[in-house]
Length: 444
Image 1 (cartoon, one colour):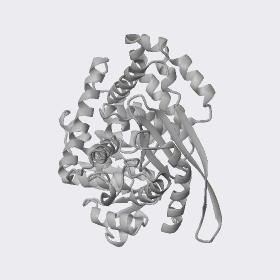
Image 2: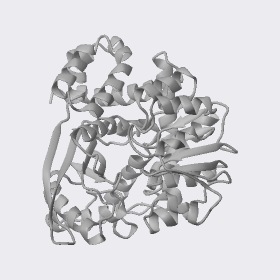
Image 3: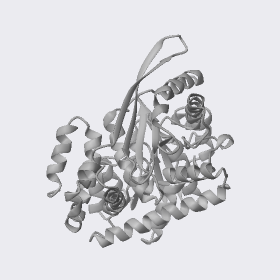
C-alpha cells in the first residue's frame, strides 16, 4: 500500500477505534495500488479520499417498551456510504454486536458489491444493537415500529432502500414497512425483502444462498471441480446457510455440517435439511436440537469446530471474521479445495492470504454473496413496474447476474496481472465502476 499509505494513515487517524472499518478499507486499498499507477487522475480528483468517507452517517436512539412494561433503549444506525451509481441499498442488521465500525465496514463493502451486480444501486447499511433472540413477536413489533419512527425520514424508494440482514427477516421487514407506510402515507418500493402478498419478490429469501452457489458452480466448473459428490461444510444455519445448503444438495453435493452461535452439528450421511428448517425457521431452537431427530449425528459445543471437519468446499455463511488463520490452516490441511464467502467478510485478511498462497479457490464475499442485493434490485424493478415475475424468471435472472460477476472479476484480475485472484478482481472492478461515476458527476 505504498502510494495509498498516507491516505490509509489519515483514515486510521480519523477512525482509530473502528477496527472492522479499517480492516475493510485496508483490504480494498491494498488491491488498488495497481489502479493508481494506471489511473493517476484518480489521485488528483480525490476519488480515493471520497471513497473512504461515507456520504452520511446517521445514529439515533430507539426507545421501546418490553412485555413487562419496562422501558428499553437501543441505538440505531444508517450509514449512507455512496449514491453515485444509484440510491443507497443495503440491509438492516439487529444484533448485539452492531456498532458504528461494523456498520461503516458493511456499507463500504456494500458500495463495491452493488457495483459488481451491474444494477444502478449505491451502497448503505443499517441496524441496531437490539437482540431479537428470546423476544416475543409483540416486543419485536414495538421495537421495529420505534426504529422506523426515526429511520423513515432518511429512506425512500428513490433515496435509500433497506432490506434484511442478520436478525432481520420477513417478519421484521413487515413490521418496519407497515410503520413506514403509516408515517409517510405512501405505498412504494422503499423496502425489499417484503412478503409476496405486499410487493415482495420470488427468490428473495433464497437469493443470497442460491446466488453463492451459482457463483461457486461457475468458479468450480472453470477450474475442473464441481459440487457433485463433494463434501461441503457451511457455517451458520440462518437464511443464507439454509438456502446455500438447499442449492448445494440440488447440485449433487453433500452438506456434512452446519452451525449456529452455540455449536456445530455434523452428519456424515448428509444434513437432513427438512429437520434444520423445522428447528430454525419454525421452532427457532438451537441447532443442537438436531440430535433429537438424528441421534447418530455429532454435536460440537463450539462454533469453530466446523472448520476442523474434512471437506472439499467450505461456505462461511454466518458473520464477519468467523474464519481466522488457524481455521484456514485446518481447512487446507484437511483437503479443502474451495472457499465461497456467503456472509459479509467472514474471513480475516490472514486467512485470505493463506488460502491464496496455498492455491485454494477463494470467492470473496463482495462478489459471491451479491445474490441477495441483486434480487433486491430485481424486486425494486418489479415494484416500479407494478409487476410480479415468476420464481423461474427471477431465478434465471439471478443466475445470469452471478455468472456475469464471476466472468467480469476474473477478466479484471487478468487485466491487472493477477489472473485468478478474485479478491483483487472484485475490488478493482467494483472500484472502477464507482470511480468512473464519481468523476463523471464532478466534485460533490
